[in-house]
Length: 229
Length: 229
DNA sequence: GTTACTTTCGGAACGTGTTCGGAAAGTCGG
DNA sequence: CCGACTTTCCGAACACGTTCCGAAAGTAAC
Image 1 (cartoon, rainbow over the protein chains, first blue to last red):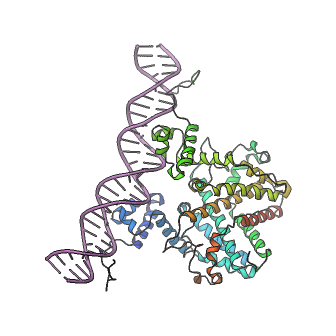
Image 2: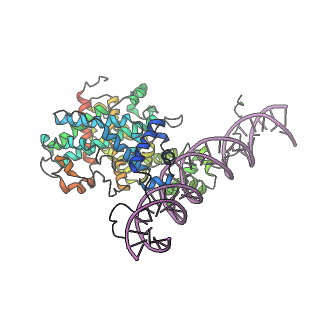
Image 3: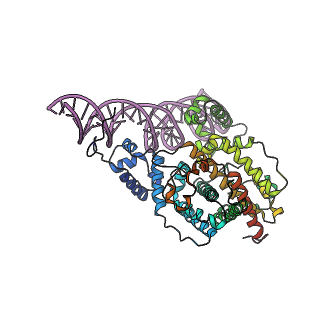
């Protein structure tokens, strides 16, 4: 049976390590040696503590990376949101996308963690920017959340795919799709010919985002507004 | 200086292991024990060979997974493509999406590998299905490839995010965005209230895909057709 | 002081992907 | 037959994330 709560102060061995300390040390380590060097053992050594000690303060490395990413996203300067709801969606999505795409190891975190925790406190402003326009477009808040979610899927996919293509160049045998392949196998692609390299390098996110937002808003507006699907 | 090419047959120690053998053994291992049990050492032991031997036939584990995924995607029964170009895009994208989403470790492969190699031979039919409709919509093949690429980004993101959310349930401290959070912090979300669980479980891919396709095609058609941006 | 309890810490160990260096086993030219 | 060369194989080792279990160090009750 558990002992009654202690009257004053904590019991047990005094802690030498705090979660905040771990996070700041991790940020230092990343800034100094690069995020590839961020390893549990190295981080523990940096703090001057055993490696297994860290596991009493974080669940695992994925947890650590998510905490770091949250801190990073919180520091993004929030974009000045235009008055037009459509532009507001585009502005907020672009801000988040550019921040993540510009941070090399953000893709790694997204790869490892996917979605959990990323937006727990840090990027709610993007959701808010989208949901706030629900009235202006005559759709329900629920539909607006779906709009956000779809845009988030697209953004994550774009960042991950592009980051990986850059990190792992195609070798001789196995060609990356966008860096070159046997176009003759696909009849309609023969016309493109040698434009593949230029195609691969192009940044299609802004255009794709606009198209997606337009399509989503048109759908949300037309399909039984105010009705719950 | 290299020796002149051998007149007949290969020189060197005869190989006991082939890439095809590795792949079939890997498939057996996955089918029998689950994909979590697919490890380099275990796979080598299954073949009856040293672990490091595999590295003379595959680049690394990521390479192995991509080869396996390619084989799997090749086996997908290709959807009957409708005559309408828009429906054709949707049908092909849905077929690929459902196949990947239904295979538990496809998400893992996508997570590890992102994009490289996935479509080198296996899913070109999806690209073809999209590019083939370029004429019908009055856009260039290059624009059609962009359409494909954006849809691919969206599909990958959706699969990865959803797969991860399912695999890593939120703990007490850190709530997944779609499983519940303090809606009071976002004024416009207060109206949603307790609908979050239902929101999280909903499958938004089909709707999002249609919206995206419509938006992309509208954009490709309107903006200076036949002109290279 | 002694005992009970609670919390924090960390060394040892496991399984992982991967690299390195050398051994094994063939063919080829003398 | 014999050395040179080439290709394949593999044991040893490394760094990694993570788990187990016991030691350390404090407070609380007696």
